[in-house]
Length: 233
Image (tube, rainbow, N blue to C red):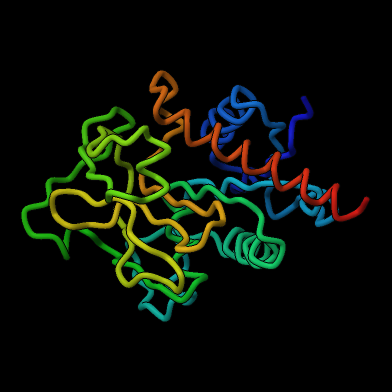
């Protein structure tokens, strides 16, 4: 069976570990991974049949009319890259999985905004930065994400973020939240595969539930490729 090409966005000189883990996750799920950075030619990106918008630096506040602070580390080149590839994905209806920063970028580019510092917003929130599954999230019943995670209501995940989704973007709904009410996952309100999770499933390589997210993306990308082939026929 043909492996659909899945683009995985990231910084040009950073995020090597995340790239390798996402690369392995996509390959194991049946896809063909492609590293997409600001230096990747557009003609190569255009051949992708699905996207992973990966984790990394904070999103520039200018993209959602927030106030820039000294506490954030941004990558304007990557912002521009992901703004462009997500715009194309919207036009082509490509399947997309957003991870941490990627989920936030999906929300921002659909008109939403972010909390720049979750610890200033959520009272009693303990500082937590770990690749281990030590945080519990509650999945919203009836969402695509809950179905992908086999109908589970709660899952243990990791946490590496200090920003989070505030106001939802257009045609998005909350798919998971934590005990403080913080958004932990979003998805499209349409049938299109567009899911963003605040955690990092690529680090949870031994969790079959989390691997299911990558398998679902690859399945959606394969269906997308088949539809394209039928249209050209």
